[in-house]
Image (cartoon, rainbow, N blue to C red; front, top):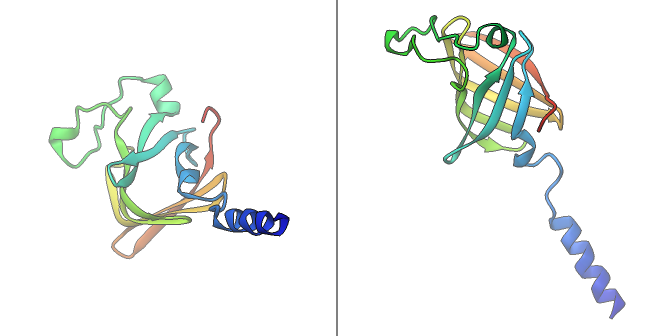
Amino acid sequence: MRRLDLVCLSAAILATPPAASASGIFGLWATEKNNGRVLIERCGAALCGRVVDGDQLRAHPDQTDVNNPDPAKRTRRVKGILLLEGYSGGPPQWRGGSVYDPQTGDESHDSTLTLVAPGTLKVKGCRLLFCRTETWTRAGGN
């Protein structure tokens, strides 16, 4: 009887997903620049990330998206807008989304999010042939 219990326990352990599962990407992340913070969450079937705060937002909480190429979006507040949108896949890499930079108004398509460690996320966005990668770290307050 003990042998059967051991076999069942071993099977349960092997069936348990590793720590770097899809839930590992969800939560609050600190960006490389301007002490920014982005909350990554599920938006429907995809992943997305919203602006929570940053140096400029702390100085000017009502900051608007003035650099957006779409004039209709230039009056929206930066706090809460989607920086990351439309990613699918998972652990450790999500693809097919876009990255928006409100500081420049640039949007990168064909971007990837790669969870390289439980507290480290590589965010890569490309425009034409040029790509840029930032390393985000898990922020406190998750």
